[in-house]
Length: 260
Image (cartoon, rainbow, N blue to C red; front, top):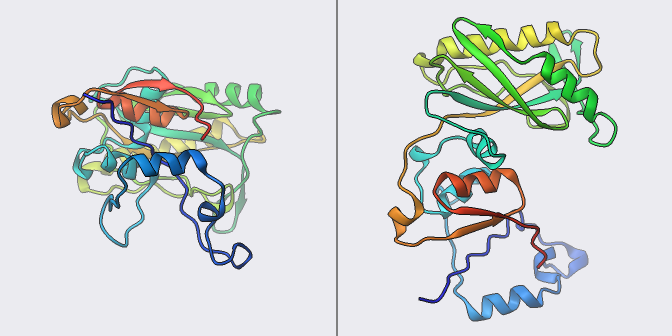
């Protein structure tokens, strides 16, 4: 059997520009290697979650590998797996980010993020200071990965159906309050809110004084890629998230920088 290579150009979508003669940057660029792939392969259109809907990158990749939204474990699980961390379906995972914030009349507002060149050691120390907090029977453990960003593991029977506290912008946006998506997640959401308050107490007076949370999830039992499609394979990816996505369905990750 000939090998099959699936090339995913994440983030290539763009708008047409007058300076490019009404073309997008992708249309205007010189892409001889990609052109050769297209000429020799098969091209098509896939709606990851339906026409007219723009899914997040992780949900889109999950769908392109042939998996359903109800099987999706949450991106934080991919982030943990991609960095070689052990995961289990008894714990809930979230992605944590150390941030600076200022107090205003209507709450705490984000004002930036640590600089990877200057703030690495300080950020790691501050994240470590907030490790191991226990609230209402839940234990919050932080595993720092870089620049004050960490994988948060919540042990003790937590529910992953909780909204993000991260506003997904560098600054000029407030820190959000975690909310339960279902009644069963109310205790977890309240514990996450109290955890956020305790983190701010531990970081009071520091340049970076909050830790936001996003991408809650937990591992789910799904068929491997071979079991679902009858094919084995590898997954070449630069980011930890993509390596973890491949590993979660039994595709052996290959860490590589792709230059097309």
